[in-house]
Length: 81
Image (cartoon, rainbow, N blue to C red; front, side, top):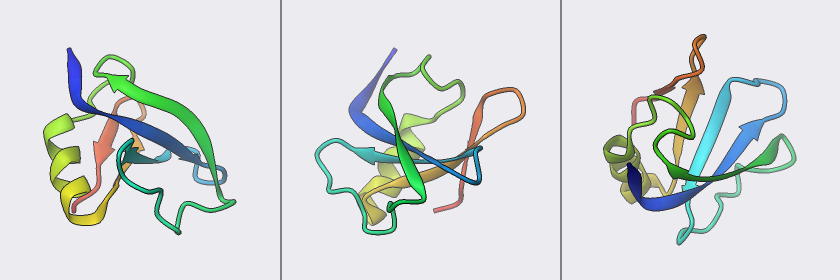
């Protein structure tokens, strides 16, 4: 399964289970600063178990990004938009 669009994935350096996914065709928000590190490209549903592309698209349309936590079992939980 592939996503409708690909995302640039950023991991928080201190809160290691917090991630920010930014659609490749959107600018990286200013809040993604030195506290974040680039963690790769998210384009495959299996890359991050549980990541919901449909929820991410809604958030990205409104805010330009989506924040989510990687759960204890490695699956993220999307934050409320």
